[in-house]
Length: 584
Image 1: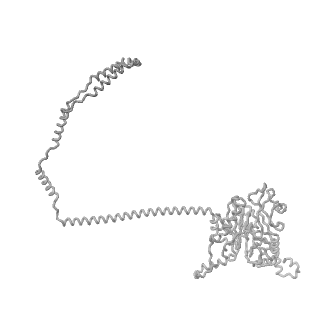
Image 2: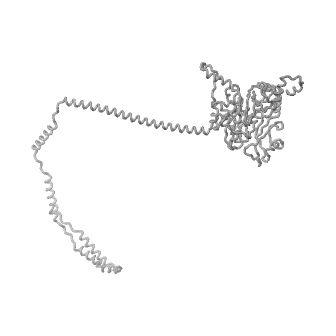
């Protein structure tokens, strides 16, 4: 260290520059500022952070690309040279502090969910995991790694009649930790915090994670150049981390400058534009693989843990700036999507950077690293007024809008149809009226022309003789002459009637009189009835009383009636009246 070297010098050997370095070193040690260091695959991001009244001030944001051999899976290959390089950057940018917080990619650590018995308390869970007799099988050696575990809010599991709680394990090998510590030491710095990238994203999205209900999950999609980091959060923290496919890179700052210049320059022809100078929006085919992996990963997680929860996606990273990316993901996966603007986080009071060199959407992790330095107990969420969510897509609102648009289109089409029908009716009626008026006018013209022609012809022709009167008089005179010439006809009907009458009278005189057959039949029937009555014995008189009563009233007896009727029949005789013959 520089302080050790200066102690060896005598007072007479000190110069002004040495004294200046001594004061700078003292000032760096007592400074409250913290260097934020994000190590990527082939780059490092550096910034200087300071907290004041629980608000974060970030300035001197630097992005430095590194050669491919400098890092191996985001771990320095040579801690000494990396430390010297880091020290030189700090000196050149006049960053006067020696405390540093480091962010490493999630690929450098091992993460998974583990089950610990319910009877083990959360404070004792780490010691239980370190015990080799615990029976928990982990593919890495916990003795050779630095790890931490956090209790999750996932449902408890029952295995062999025993209840288990879910914990999220994050383990970083001690070998990698030692390399990072050596690199920081060689840069004459002191490390105060070491964070994984998924925890930095969790700090950035803390306000949104705290808003989650029991039936909701937050899905973080960090769209990087090399890959896409997929993380599932609940209110307790991260639950699942996976590396997914990347999408087409968003144009860099230099490429965007070329695109803007080419669009503003109207003199150049379109044929001279190169492909890099033209930005094309994403299509569904461009993110087809990513959509499939997101959908499959989330579905597998839900089915594995028997969950029925709704997810919401938050996009971060440089490639999240594609214009139509939010709608493509939301419509395809039928899920709510939001784009995060990291610099507009409510806890960021000031973020000073050069927009010609730094893309603010690529600063998500380093800003989340800075937020981890703040005390989270008294934080107030003002993100709505700071545009923390730059863009959002709500699938429910999209469905409502689609249904409304369909109804409006139908109503407009119906109104148009009605108006068209009315117009057609009006036009047909008007056309009919016009045609009728034309016909009437033509008919009137024709009638007037005919009348005028007839009148002219009547005036030209002489009057015709009355031929009908002469014909009638001549026919009458001819009929009278014929009647006088013909003799009278004999009356044939009178003669026929007289001859028929004389013939009928002669026939009547020739025929003998007919015998009276009805009188004989009646006499014989009466004599037979009397004989039968004499042969039969007399019947008992059952109705004497009734007959006596009837006789009292003056009614005649039955025997008297029979005798009278018999006498009447005997007295009657048939006589033929011959007077009608005379009439004939």
